[in-house]
Length: 87
Length: 87
Image 1 (cartoon, chains in turn blue, purple):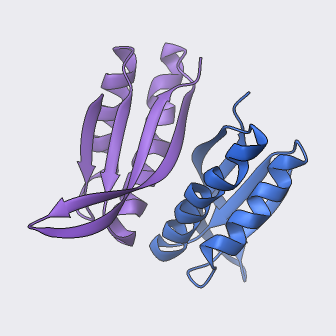
Image 2 (tube, helix red, strand yellow):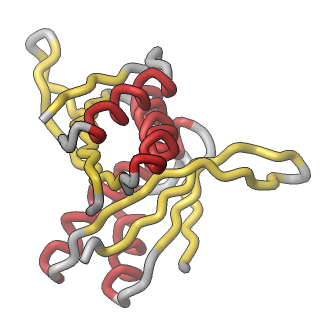
Image 3 (tube, rainbow over the protein chains, first blue to last red):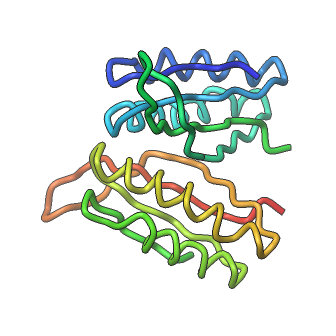
């Protein structure tokens, strides 16, 4: 599974392009975001990506989950989105 | 479709309970959030709700989208999540 790390500075259109590319390859993508601003950018990216893949007959769905990750030795709670083709 | 409006002050566990109740009734729920903090609470709520409905055999999925809404006469862009049972 491809992993994309999204920050508060990430550009939704660029992240959406990366999500779309993975889905068109028939693969699933995991998006990781820490903090409200990053989660917001991740959600926008997923919403934009839906429009990118519709012409390819892909109906994108996502599942959010919590995930504990290690950042410079400190444990932080991140939000993880698994994005895949519904069909 | 049930509509839940989530703000930055919403409690994820309470919103998750509301999402779970709608899904157990076999219905679909739409969650509306404006701003990064509200979107973050909405995503946490959906992640918590997944755990609530798993024992009921419900595999929750969501689709984020943009939505224009009217707030006190001004048009704002909100994030809308449609949450439903996968199967």
